[in-house]
Length: 115
Image (cartoon, rainbow, N blue to C red; front, top):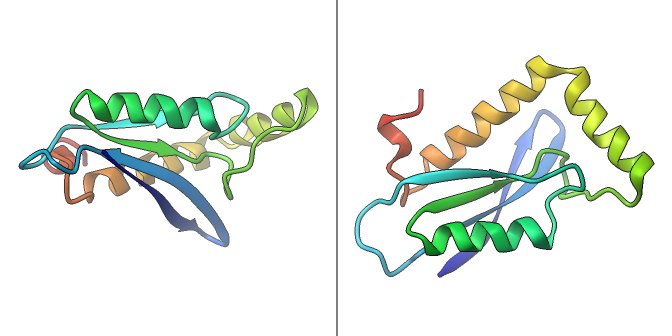
């Protein structure tokens, strides 16, 4: 099993996702995009991403807040999630870009199914 941080830039912000896959599998594998809950990309979602990869997928845990930030408390969570909700067009663009990152993974079969 291989798990690597995947850094990418959106405008001026750096996001740090995580990609996981079975590096012993031959050929390409289907891809799954894993989203974190309102607390951010933490250990719980990283473990879920690893489990998905063990099932034979290339799994990309998407960092939706940037810089792998995690909410420190309920107010922080409201602010981080509110930023996504207040700009749905931008949030949709971010999701599409995450899919493109997964699609371009050398191990994923998504290249023909995501446009």
